[in-house]
Image (cartoon, rainbow, N blue to C red; front, side, top):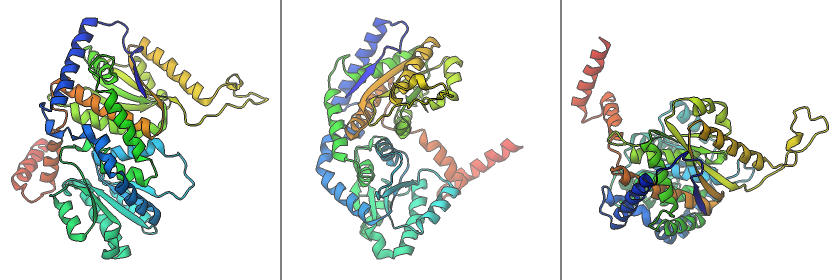
Length: 443
């Protein structure tokens, strides 16, 4: 279902270095299996493909109730609480929908007054439901959104009906959102204690919005289960081993930036999800690759110049969808004013693939190497496989790097400053200190 092609990754290869990396990856694999590495209390994602199958019916039932009765499902969450489901939905739904499927709108993943205001005005004429996703219920961005749109919903339909339209995905036993859900009688789904946000796409966090969008979540889990089984092999034939080896090999050779490239625009939010997964997992202790993404061929007309001839500190990982779900030919014209009749016996996907091949060769010549991940087609099972592949690769890679791939201590730094500047109760000393610091920088 997935193959890692390293044909464009190296001009020369050092077999001793590769073997040393494979040995380190195998050791990391054993660490994951034993569950004795840093952050091992967050390894619950490993068994989700099988465990979540027992919840499929309930998730589908709730999703059907929401989608049949309402125009919009408002999904409130940030980071892993929205990126996974949005990645799956965007990659599998048609570009332009004319049917009556429920509209999935995400909010709470930024702090934009324009977005909030426009969305509030939009929803006034819509029948909508809410899926609020937060372990604590106090994370600033989603908490602001939930307070706002819960109030709007209660204003529109009354508190009694509103509770029937709100589903909370939260901690099993504690936290502000769990307390409120119990008090109000909201339908709830659990975020497992041993699954971190960026690994939560295969829990109800991701599965409920995906099911509401009409996507087959059982197929998604089946694909992930196939990946779990395939990636259990402890040898260089393991495709995760190949990917992790290549990115660490390039990292050791001064390639500091990994760009995830997609030639199918539907994969844009898979790339956004991937950036959080690897960036938040590996960027610690002054280590790790910087993760970026681009959509080709579009971005070849902007970033292409830099990638070809700029500073030689990056490599690309290409997601190549081998078979399009649908394709069409370029039609010839009598005049041929645009000079495209020479393409008239080709499909659009063929042209796209030739653009990819030409770019791979050009970038390799320009010392911007590429790892190619071939995926047979774009459907729920293959996306499930791809997501699990990246999760497993990320865990392996983090342990090879010598860091805890499941925490995010650096994220707290900006929050402390923000709370101090907002004069949050309990931050009085921090507020005084940061205001003095700002004053001194302006003197």
